[in-house]
Amino acid sequence: MLHLVPTLAEVSLSVTQEAITRYAAVTGDYNPIHVDPVFAAGTEMGGVIAHGTLSLNLIWQSLEASIGRDRLPGAELDIRFRRPVRVDDLISAGGILEEEGGAYQVWVRNQDDVVVIEGRVALTAR
Amino acid sequence: MDATSGEAAVTGEAIHFADFVVGKVMGQVETPISDEKVKAWTELYPWDAEKGGEAPWSMATALMMEAYLKVVAPRPPGNLHVNQVMRIEDTAMIGEAVTIEIMCLAKHVKGVRRVVELQATGLGADRRRLFDGLITLYWAA
View (cartoon, each protein chain N blue to C red):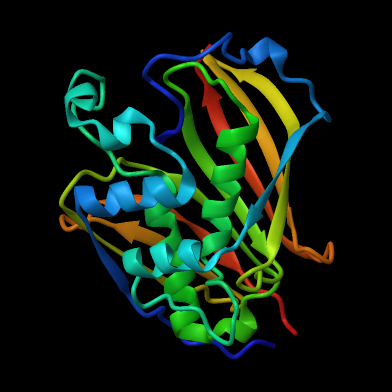
């Protein structure tokens, strides 16, 4: 039986264009929908959106901050991207322990409390 | 839903849905986890520092995406990354080269959507397993 905190520590990020460009450099993903405001304005998105995994990474960081690095091996995340994240959004990742234990319902929300990513992380008892 | 592929000019003939062969390894990428890479990461996520020479664990997803973008190219404009499954087992040490293999796990049509599932497997320099990812995309063409 895993003994886990009931609520994951919230981890937040201000998604500036600079942050998006830094993430593009890390991943090599220079898709203009992320880095070219003029191009992005002409797409169905109507403007720049952040890379989905830029936000997703916060879930892992929230998990590590809450339960420690030693409990990460074997963790399995399953999420869905629900909404785009825009330039200058303030996003926060968190989660709550499921009643049965052993897994968290996780999310990333924006400053308007709109869910942009949601899903589940199951942990392995070790 | 996250746009993942080049909405700008596609160089060469883009990979189409019909080109995906289920079960086929599409390629692999070796990525060194350099000091510079980790530094760039911690400038973006200052609270996610390396510990004891280990790369931040949350870098796994970014490594997977980097490999996907290199291997599965050129891509048609308008793809959407809709789902992500990720299992992590270990992390790389700074200075270690990580090998990531991309395989087409499945594809099917769901309504008007062309769904492609790509499996990413990350291995350390000693071939220990670092992560397994499943990227689900709506393929645009």
